[in-house]
Image (cartoon, rainbow, N blue to C red; front, side, top):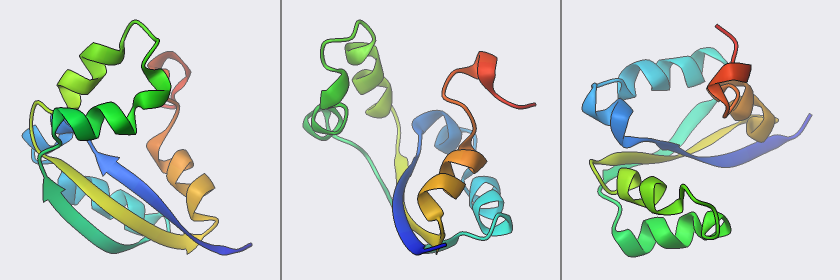
Length: 100
């Protein structure tokens, strides 16, 4: 296994509900280390660029509006196989496929 770094965003719905600490604890319990973290508001231009790959999809405008609706926490996570581990901690994108 390789030591990796990956980018993660704690989204507006979680920051609104004050879940940043609990989410960070889940990352740390899984063996990831938070090496950088910043709370900020995404601009429309930043959200548009970040989600550009989805620009032709019907949910694009709703997604970018949502990401600008409240502060986000952007962070760099580090650990063994950090990319795969982050995906495992975060769960499936589709809620119907997510573990309990």
